[in-house]
Length: 400
Image (cartoon, rainbow, N blue to C red; front, side):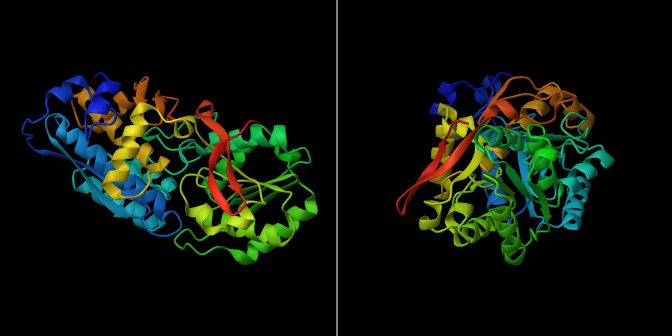
């Protein structure tokens, strides 16, 4: 199935990426029957903005697909649920969708260790925004085998960690201190950093328990961490936590006189305005904050610009990378089902493992039997939130 041309992207109100020539020619044909997909995302709690952006974009992708011939001549339907950052809820939703006849699952965006395990047990395709897409897909490390039934189009935590590790190695002359959550997400970010900077070279490695079902920061624990970081005399501190906790940490660091310490974030820090909206302009003009972002976000393609405009027009809010990620996932799913000519799990899995050079919103994407993350190291660049006086601007690409 051929990938859509830039001309098609620009000319279609709904076809942003992934519509084939054959699908485009089918526009206007009556669809017969439905194909169901289940989405499990955080629509409340600390990562609600991530899940909402993903579901919004999935709806745009479904509209584009159904307007251009559907999937196997049928209407694509996605049902959406909120896992509330709860592994039990995510597991129940997964099984419910399977029992209702779904052919694949999207997610979870924050309970991925549960959904990928369910996928493995049931031998059922799970793809798209699967949390950080790193340790959730490769539970035994970035060089080990992936979960065979999970394919992530999400930001790869291992790759983000490595990108930030490269920045720290080049720019943090007095060393790096690491603070991370105690889940697979935080451990994955740490593992990515340690591919560049060995754990023995870190000035600190502290694990914090966070409540993802709440957007309230863990202030007491963070005050202790600020004191430890300043005492370590580190040039930089990696704060791999929720954007709410990152914001609190930056403000506490400023209050404690630690403005000279550069704060490194994670894939959530720069993805939307949650972090930057919680830190005062005055503080962000003093504390240097570095994250890692996709090159296509920093320098959008024609397809990305078309998608951004459509998202803004539809939802009256600026799009984020989490939407692009899920849009790509839905388009890829439609592509592989059409290529397989079947909705059987094994047929879908076989086509996913053969996906090659798919031109999506997040880049040129591929999967193999051994590579189940479509976004990897070369797609990232370090970015800094730039402030001018009390007027914040944006995340800008920086050199290591």
